[in-house]
Image 1 (cartoon, rainbow, N blue to C red):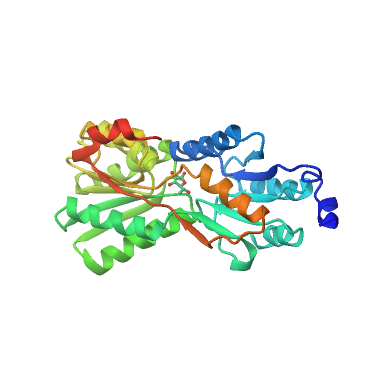
Image 2 (cartoon, rainbow, N blue to C red):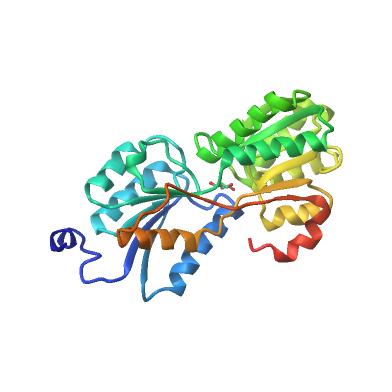
Length: 306
Ligand code: GYE
């Protein structure tokens, strides 16, 4: 409609799909792969896609600012990987009032379903549950472990914890979590927190569960520096499936990674295009993912894309 077009300066006389994407930052190899996937797809389709990309450097306030500026630009669709789950109601309502659909990518937001169109991403509860089963198998159903949590308040951290805890409580009561602490999804903090766990609990620790591979790669360094063998003395289960973790598995220094797919670029833009064209989209576009273990890591490595 002409009236709507007048209110959308970027779209006016622009047949391209104009998308604003508010990325979290660059905390992990996983996120770098996601950013690359989104920018690559847009770059391959410059004649039909105009991508405005914002990096929020891990701050929700920066993501909110980016969304507000996308609303002012009058983009067709706003994509967001919400750093934390809560605190989005006001800005999502602004987008809705401006007639701009919101697509959540890779992490969920805790808002009324009417405030966003769809979530494209993984089932983190399922990932946590699978991680618990793998840990229990590695430890023969019994042992003390520590947990490196993701960013406080992030859906990927909340649900990976819940899925893991529920599965342990229901079916693997011989597994005891000595302590859980956030490592903010980064390698540096994962290492730091693991060092302090090792100081406190020493050889009581038989396993580490990390909410992402980057934190585990940091933890592996800490374990080695403390004189233990990661993957042997201390078993590891983490989430993502980044190349570095496959290398660690191939070297015998890690045990399992539960895959979480960051290559969402094509799905994201296909969904945005449907929304621009007024076509229906599913409320949750779920990723298809596997579980990878040490025994096949060397063979799997050449096929890994991130
Ligand atoms: O697992 C982690 C990242 O939101 C699913 O964020 C994503 C998570 C991913 O930094 O490595």
